[in-house]
Image (cartoon, rainbow, N blue to C red; front, top):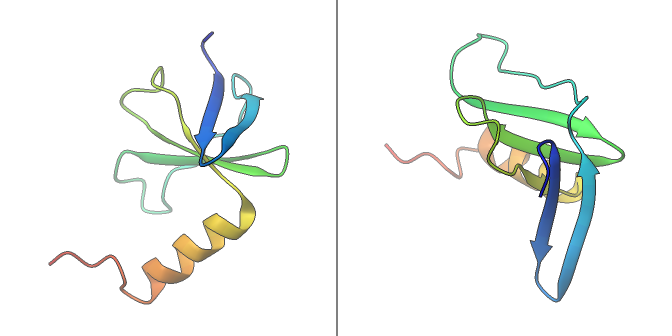
Amino acid sequence: MSEGIVEQRVAGGTGPELDLSGAAWQSSSQGVGDVQVAFVEGWVAMRNRRTPEVPALVFTPAEWRGFVLGARDGEFDLT
């Protein structure tokens, strides 16, 4: 896989092959943490800022919305 292109494997098939080399990666508004997201061709990609060469995770808008709503509700609070 060339740098900047990601292939997502999903249950029952293969997801999109997105060229992320020109993606506008965004970090949190506080500028802390290693997670970055980019909105590309109707998909949401997420990567680790410290290892951008590792393939990104790719989500549908519905999956991303479910994650964001769950995070807001404290569903993932591990403390």
